[in-house]
Amino acid sequence: MHCRIVRSGAGSKPITLEEWTAAASKNPNVVITGELKQENPFTHEILKMKLPGSGYWCPASKDHTGWPRDGTVRFQFSAAGVVFIQYSNIQNTELQELANELCAVVESYAIARGS
Image (cartoon, rainbow, N blue to C red):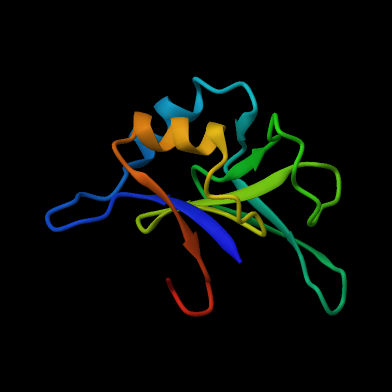
């Protein structure tokens, strides 16, 4: 399970790259690299994809134990919102602050199902 920051509700506009970059720049624990790095769970090959607005986050709460097992959380930006991969704490204070900055919400998200 993952979580994402997204605007929801009738008439909501998607978060733009510019809005996301501005909000993320206010949190020193969020690093936008323009690249998504993931591990293939079967071959353990590291995959890198150029994705504007994507990068990694080092939660101040130190509550992430998933891949890459160094305490960081990878995130992917898209028109559908910002997905924090393998991180499911929708109550995290830092994510809530980012969502508030974007007039958005933090919600649970399953990539395979799309919600």
